[in-house]
Every structure is written in C-alpha cells, then in structure tokens.
Image (tube, helix red, strand yellow):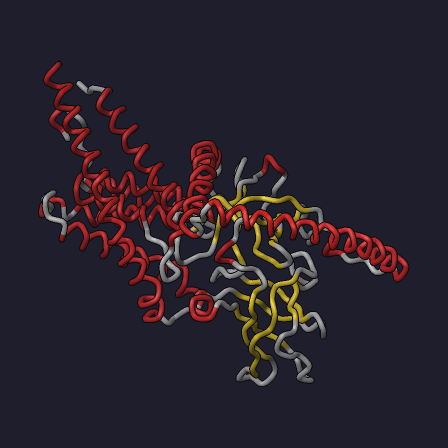
Length: 178
Length: 283
C-alpha cells in the first residue's frame, strides 16, 4: 500500500529547497559576482541530489530546476532542462561510492558537473554562432564559475544532505508509530 | 525506495523519457515559439514576490557593507545634500524654462524628436544571472502592466535591451551585451548603417560590444561618434543611443569596417530601467 504522507512531505521539502536555491541564484548571488561570474546554485542542488539520493530524484529535480532556468532565459526553451536532467542522471551513477562524511568526492562531482554544464551550454548555443575559441571561454568563464560554485557548495551542500536525513528520520518515526 | 511497495522506475528509462520530453519542448519552442505557457504563470506567483524581497535585502546588505557611516557623517552629509537640493532645484527650474523654449523652437523648426516622445514605464531589475553565458535579467513588470514581447528597454539615456518573454508580473529582458544579441545600428553623424552585436569575450575583456558591417567609404566615421538604433531595424525603435565608437578598422574585404563601441549604459549596476511602451511595427 502506498502511504501518501511521506510522499507529500518529500514533495514539499524538495519544492521548498528548489525555491530557496533558485531565489538565491537569481536574486542574491549575482550581486556578489567575482571575476564577472556568479556561482551556479542549481548545479549544486541537482548534482548533490544525484549522487546522494540517486539518479531518479536527481533527474526529477533537475528537470524542474532546468525548466525554471528556461522560463527566465531568452534562448531555446528546454535546453537547460535537458542539461540538468543529464547532469542528474550522470551524478546518480556515483551513488554507490558516495559516503556522507567525505567532502572530496561531492566537491569534485559538483565541480565537474558545473564544467560539464558549461561545456554543454557552449556546444548548444555558442558553437553554432561561430564562437569557436573554446579555450578562452573555458579559462574565463567555465573555470571561474566552477571554482566559485565549489566554494559556495561548501555551505549550500549541507542543507541538501540534512534535508535528506531529516526526511529519512521523520519517515522512520512515522513507520514506528504506524 | 521500494520497501513500501512503491514502483521503482529504472533510472535509464526515466532518463530517456525526460530527455525525449526536453527534446520535444525544444522542438515545440522551435516550431511554435512556445516558451513556458502555464509554467510562466506558476513561477510568476511563486518567485517574483520573493525575488523582489531578496533583491531589496541584497541591496541593503550591499549598501551597509559599502557605507557603514557614523551619525556625525550622516548629519554632515545631510546638510551638504540639502544645500545641493536647493541648488539643483534652482537649476531644474532654469532647465525647465530652457526646455520649454527648446520645445517652442523645435516646433517652429518642425523638428520632431521621436526619442523623447516615447511613452515609457519604469521597472525594477529583480533577478539576473540564471547563466553566466547570457546576459538576461528579469524586471518586475509584465503583461498586467501592458508590457509586450519586443518592447525596447532603456536606462538613463541609452539602450539596454529588448523584452523576450513576458509573464503576468514579470518580463525577461535580453540586454544588448548578451552574446546572442544583434541590433541594427546607425552612426549618428553620417547615417551609415552597421550591426551592433554583443560579444561575451569583448565584454569580459574590455566592457565593449562589437560593431560590424559598417560601410564607410569616405572614412568619415571617427572614434567617439555616437551610435544609435537604426530606422531600418525590425525590432528596435529608431534613434535610441547605444554607445560611442571606440575602435574601428577595415575588414579583410576592404568594403566594410568593424570595430567596437562602448555602451552608454552601465550594465553591471543596473537597478531601474524604463520600458518603452510601444513596439516597432513591421510589415
């Protein structure tokens, strides 16, 4: 039998964290941009969910985050959604080797995901318009963004992980009561 | 996940389903120009109020960080500013008189300054930076305030960009420094047409945007000349200042010139913009 309460709780919790992170990305962090770039908060969320919780939650949240980015972008509608789904899926493959107490792997994965995201945006939207100097964009946009994202993820990584634990705990408690 | 009997979808299957879904969205966007539909309305009521709030908070954080002033300093500044207000008010009155005179004279000359006649509405920039690759931002006015796609956005005296998508209470603006932006421009002095395109590389290196396809056979265009939007542009209203030519050189084909222009708008610190409430009518 499917219980609805934990499902609703999960949806609310995930919706809330997507909301907060999206507002952070679009309204707060652009004010504190370094070297002309602001961090990619959505990548932190999608990537972390991918390797901590599995490919399916990663992809689902990735789709929602991507669609949000698409709504507030002026390019091809659906592009960010696709990129985020791919990133959620790829990060899901690392769930087997992820242990919560080690920060090296999460930071590495978040950084790599951000570079991958940059690479895909470049391929989808820049190459076709004849902007072929990839090394330039790599050094001046993708790398600084990845570094800044990793720095920010030192803080923003924990709410995602603890949300997970909190949900798991409250589900267990409910099961014990029931 | 399946310990409570939930159906467990293999992630590969879900992956293909979602990617195909996104591909369909992209195709739909390509064919019909679909850009969110109902999703826009949902996001409108969830995000816009919060972004407005955060924007104000962020602004105050920046302000307190920048200028933590003592009471004495504030009093001194207040006095100085009051004095300044008085001088400015006098100046303003003079200016208004001159403006009246100018209007009267232009009327006499039957010159009509289109530029100042545009009906504009002010809007606040509430969000930006959903990607470092593009330069778009969100403003707090939308279709409820009469904003439509393709309306031009200006700030101060210069062109900022164009509205690319509209929700009930917000609009997305693509600025002219965006890498995919192309504006048909015109050299003010010589009326030569050219293309003004945003270039991320130029923007990061030197805060400039690129100018190309300028046919200037007599070498009349000089550094420092103003560039405005052209009257042959399909989406931009004519005569809006874009920037000043800062560099110009012959192209390899020896027929046209290209170079860079410095935009008049400070895109880094954009807070308020004006939306021109009319779109250019094209056949």
